[in-house]
Image (cartoon, rainbow, N blue to C red; front, side):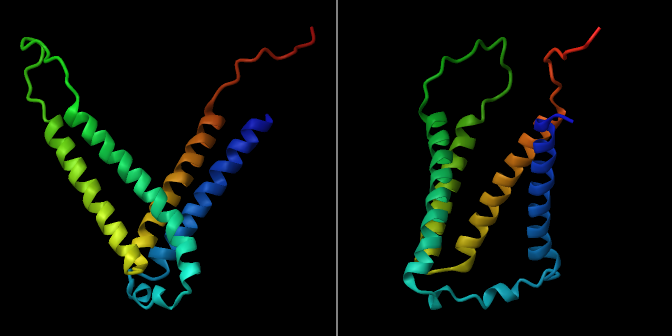
Length: 159
């Protein structure tokens, strides 16, 4: 088996295992009893400890939300040539969807900043879980791409 395929299998197995363990530990072990997370009091942490965790999570989350807002804003403000009426018969709802995207991203940004300000556990836990799931999903996807890609290199065959 080629070395790249071995790395592909390892990345798939490790990323799927880490994701499975995180889902198991959060949702299955507690058996839908999320009240244990209510007892987490981030106000008891040292300010340096709290902000060393909160700032990177907040920066990444706000970056992703700002990107979503920017995409919505571009859709709203871009000037496009209307297509010929004979070709397009359906109504274009992209502006409405762009407004909804902008409103959702702004409200999530405000909630994130407010949650970090009041040191809410969920304001850090939910974005951290989502960011981790996206990164693990990307590693899984790359591993699957490595595994399923056929090699087009010519092999040396002795004749």
